[in-house]
Length: 327
Ligand code: ADP
Image (cartoon, rainbow, N blue to C red; front, side, top):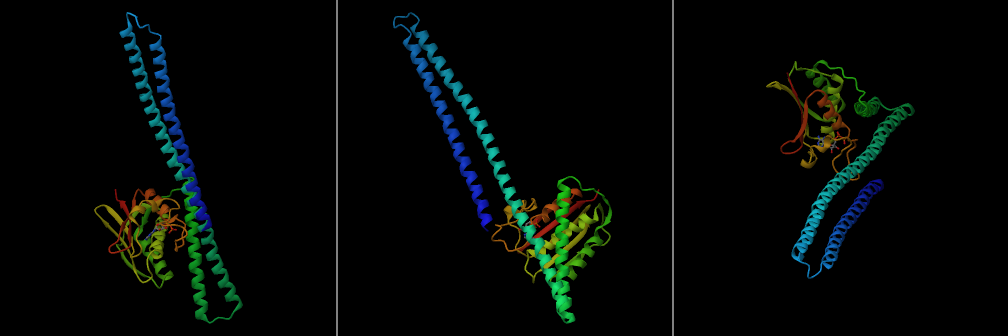
């Protein structure tokens, strides 16, 4: 929490310093313009003073001086406005990049904290369970329960490791693509079976059309589905249903995961696919996570030339849809 405040303060500090600096620059620029105009007036006055009152060309000379003065003033205004425009354009660009960079580094810091936490929790729980099983003579039911919890935690750890590994491989351009004809129906059914076993308290409603094939990577598609279902579980109340649909229509393969949970705020519906982005403030958030899952899902969809989007579910919750165009 302290760190979160530090991050906010850092952003505010940069904002204040930047705007002060910018205001100073613009004020200096306006002052520079005023000085130039004044100087122009003084030059004109000196020139007026050098004309004799009985000069036969008095009117022409005065006109010439006025013309010159006007031309110079127009030149200052024209050049000044162009420079000011370019300067402000650059300043806005720099400001946006700076704020983006700070936000990104804050998100990265949050990610590191989240990862540390996400890694430590399953390890600590599993370790404690194994120690208890070794030390105490528990009845088979209790033993089974402890083993089930440990298995769930290690599976969570496995998913997290897969996400982190894939994200770094994709970022470094090291991911070796190996697209093949895969049975998506089978992947969805098998993944759902794992979830049904893992989360026996949750209700999954499955509607999977058989024999849907596409050219892709089964490991990636499985990861995509894992992340979408994981999120549906995390962001919806335990008594609500989770719907997983797979069907093909009008040359499109559609895979959707629908929940009746908190839903995604309209303003965040694109941002949630950004790396490390999590809705809400870190210190008020109760769910665990790293902000990597949907980023990967988006990358996986892109890898398959497919689209991944979220729409609100009625009356509440969200629907994540993966749409693949069959050639
Ligand atoms: P994580 O769940 O680890 O935070 P994700 O990248 O999977 O990261 O999701 C990013 C954010 O999108 C989440 O923090 C959450 O705020 C939001 N989100 C994802 N899935 C759902 C969902 N099914 N319902 C509501 N919000 C969601």
